[in-house]
Image (cartoon, rainbow, N blue to C red):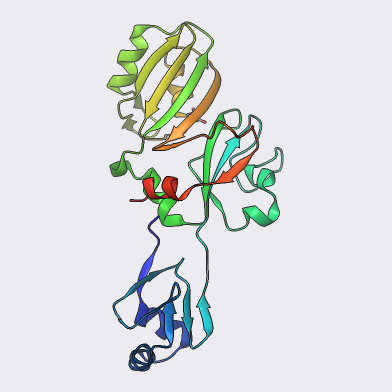
Length: 236
Ligand code: URA
């Protein structure tokens, strides 16, 4: 849940266009609150989601938002699209305002999509060093063999990006169905990996991102706010 931080005295000084010495006096007088608590320390850190009030004037009041959405097939993971409905259309104008997607899914993929207005949080989820595992359930057109398990675990070279994919764990669920665990999200990665076997993906469904699982009570197109626990578990 980390968000961009700054020191309280710097924040107030730039908001009110006053000298930092004057901010010290305000703090000493006890007229500044951060998230409802009187602030006296110039070194206190605030972020874009701290509520800062000075002498009964609200200087900042933004609420961090975190949502999960069950993305249906045929809906684009984008804010605008001329051809298809977008996930923002599903949320509706008011509730999608200021949100962005943390990890897109392709047009025909389904499942868990996370949305937020906290850029630091969404960046942290995709940072390679944070190793956030995503689980997908994939159905393909031709039988899956043990060769796939080996090839996915070894990584595949993608010439276009000049990278080798990090190990992917593939568990064969049935002849045509596998569960995949990935810690990265390259462009069309799963389809391209099965493409090496000339095996088209029939359906692709994201079950989880890190510790957050798609809520079984959601129907395709529905969304809900993340719980405090889910937010806490995805904070770096
Ligand atoms: N890999 C894909 O190929 N498509 C997705 O939607 C997600 C991962």
